[in-house]
Amino acid sequence: MARAIWSGVLSFGLVAIPVELYSATEPHRPAFHQFEEGTADRIRYQRVNERTGDEVGYADIVKGADVGGGNYVILEQDELDSVAPGRSRSMDVHAFVGLDEIDAIYFDKTYFLGPGGGEAAKPYALLRDAMEDSGKAAIASFVMRGKEYLAAVRADGGLLALETLFFADEVRDPRAEIGNLPGRVKLSQQEVRMARQLVEAMSGPWTPSDYRDTYTDRVNELIEAKKNGQEFQPAAGPPSATNASDLTAALQASVDAAKKTGRGKPSGPSKPGKASGGSKAGVKSQSGKTGGKQAQAKKNTTATQRHRKPAA
Image (cartoon, rainbow, N blue to C red; front, top):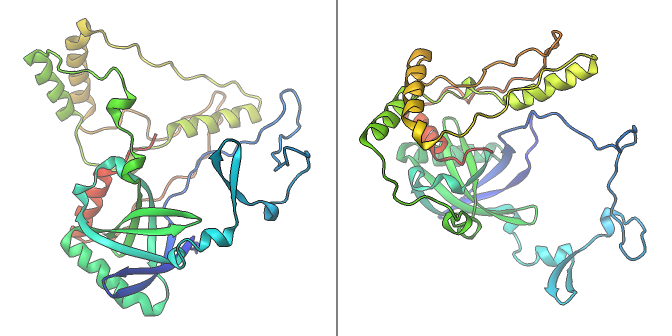
């Protein structure tokens, strides 16, 4: 049984529902430590007083805000807690909006939101079913671990899911960040038609289990190969950029290849391969999505997936 990382009260109107927050995802990447090159000596990090050089215990560390000129305002934890008493245990709903109104760039991380005890079951189910019927998400805010979060709470089958959102001032203006964005470009009708054909030929349903973190698979293969003293075959490099003069030919070849391999098939391998010498990376497969969803829940989930910020 997973342990809740936050507990409090979700309130909308005059209704207050005890809830608990759980992580919805887990990374499967290998854990690396740091060593001094040429030795088996681990590198450790310590909290050190820069004036005395002495190590400082975590309990003896306080926070300081830089106010300029080398000056700092020191803040104790109880002073930070006094800024908004009770906010660390309160999740306030501000409005209900359609999921398709939220741009994908605002989505950050997904959590499961469960009821906080038996008495919360009825109001929890009431809110879940009401949002499921309406197809809307609740926009709420709460404080966790000294930080305020904006969140979208949505119905997902038999439970409520919570998506943390970036605040508007945390989202950068792409035109200010990228100086060479193309303006209007002259495109031939043939190029536009073939590009649309390629999109159509590669279209298909969203099936999460079709995709794997193949980079982590390869890293695990490398670790396994080195552990067993075997050779490892490096992967091929990235393809060369397509020249504008070769664009039509590349589009045509892509359309032909997509039609042969089938619609919507992922281009990467769906299963980990073998390292040179027969070693195989052992990576725990991720579980599928929560089953037993109703038709409207599927619609809501699909909308969220469609608008979620893609992982790097």
